[in-house]
Amino acid sequence: MVRTLKATMATILVPGGFCFLVPYFILHSAQERLARGAVLLQVLAALLTLCGLAMVVWVSVIFVRKGNGTPNPLEPPTKLVIEGLYRFVRNPMYAGALLILVGEVILYRSGWLLLYSAGLWSSLHIFLVKVEEPQLIRRYGMKFVNYLETVPRWIPRIPDRGAPGRS
Image 1 (cartoon, rainbow, N blue to C red):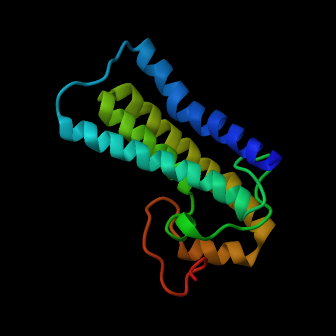
Image 2: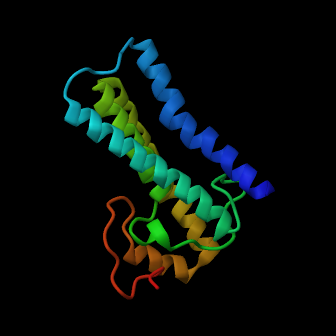
């Protein structure tokens, strides 16, 4: 129960802050409003945002249930999670957060949000390559190395039958 509460708080504070609070301040300071018209774009934006939100929540839940940890880097999963969304992409929480931001960029048609999203993606990519992946290699060894070789970092794909996490 405590781990679930910690995971919920970590999910609300970190992805919630980067995906909703920071964009709110960007939009507010730029005095940008919800774009009008183009109903298909609004529907696309809503679908991307909801899909991204579902991915972020799913990762938080599986970290607690299968990984015995939380999304908080101070209490990471103690077990390597390579099932579910992790079969398709190595970073579904980050990918989900970026989908939320892309949805917001489309919904508001904001160049400032696009710039913020690109900066966040660049920062996440550098963090993954330089910090997170080396830490996970040290923590999980060859099992994670094999996972790195078979599952893409950002662009999801259907895994091969022999890929890690495939039942």
